[in-house]
Image (cartoon, rainbow over the protein chains, first blue to last red):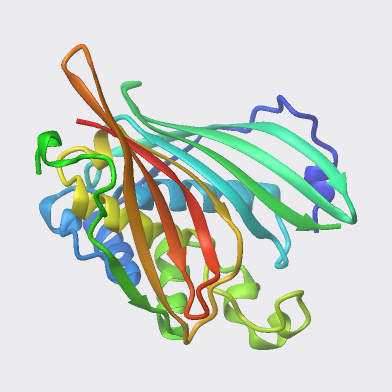
Length: 130
Length: 136
């Protein structure tokens, strides 16, 4: 289901999302991935957890259907996120086109602290069945 | 590990993961991504893959773990990664995550380490491929 996405033009700015990753969430993420790097036990959020949770919010905001698959991903980290640190995610639709019966959507999300310090940037392409 | 230990041609420490449906379920809860293509066998049977697949971001979490292990002080603060998801990882598969340094350059006292990364399936097909850079 991509009716919402189908109505949006590249450049569309989504409403900012704020979220916090607490210690339980960081540990749950690390356990799920099987991450042995022990960041979660040092008060830091595994870097990709920020991107994963942010992308989930974008998927939810777009009401993407169950057949959506991830095609490509770029990430850049600027600072480690700390547990319990409020994170603000700002997302812009960068691309939105239909090819061979599937919609290709690209969104860019920047993650920052509440005070505006950069944490990460992510560019995600998903393929949504039409 | 300091940048001086890295040279082009070196391999990153490999990570091997046996992916289970239980792990995919746990990841869905941890990442708040409950797309039924990952969780619902009946739904997934009707997709192009014919069965449930692991989240692409779970595979990318494996890649990130490898990079965190290789560059513990730098990956989360100055890392960059660009990947394509080329093939799905199915629960029950064991995948290998590997990487190789392709370039180390120095500019203004900062080393930039560039490496390839790949997540390889049991049949040697590539599930994820890309490049990573880390400033050290």
